[in-house]
Amino acid sequence: MQSKLNRLLSSWQKGTVRTSYSLRQNGYSDDLLQKYAKSKWLESFGYGAYKLNGDKVEWYGALFTLQTELDSTIHVGGKSALQLKGFAHTISDELQKVNLFHNDNKLLPKWFRDHTWNVELEITKTSKCGTYDQSFLSHETSNGISIKVSSPELAIMEMLLKVPGSESYNEADLIMNGLMTLRPKIISNILLKCKSVKAKRLFLYLAEKHNHPWFKKLDLQKFDLGKGKRSIVPNGMLDPKYQITVPRESNE
Image (tube, rainbow, N blue to C red; front, side, top):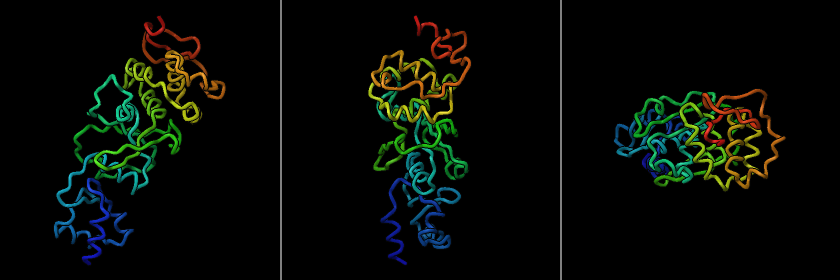
């Protein structure tokens, strides 16, 4: 039994959660896990989850578990991903709110939803970005824990999905201005899969406005931009090419 416990402890990445389901799959019964907890090797982290005794688990350690043990599509996206990658120079590098995106049909586990984290988690379930191809995602490491994060190409599209709701047009405009090195092939694939006409039109409008070199490599005829007008901001000015209302000063 001791060697089995040693194997468990030595393979457990500090700062992360393990699920009861995963542990059972690896030969650790609920009775045995409860025995380890009573012996102060493990601690409960809510229903169906454990952590190492005395260990501190931050939001990214829990996110790692969702991604690796539960095969969830949840990932850091939108403005938070752009912050982590150093593209959001207009805002603080310190994450006070973390934007998480997923398109899972199952509910996120109770131990994750109910825990009080040291940052605000804004969780968005959406299928508007289609499936999350591996080329749309990247990895970031915090305290030795690697988590999936949106690529800059996907992150800006996720941010634009929230304009003008929880994200502002002006901030998206400023961030887009700095996205000079986006990859046209990845952008093209995202635009083909994206189901939000408004976000696609706004993305292309801002890219053309800032005259990014990669914009010239996009074949706009390939993308479904829908029909009719879309309102981005109230009392705005209609852009005749993309048929969206944008702030008047942006065209002046």
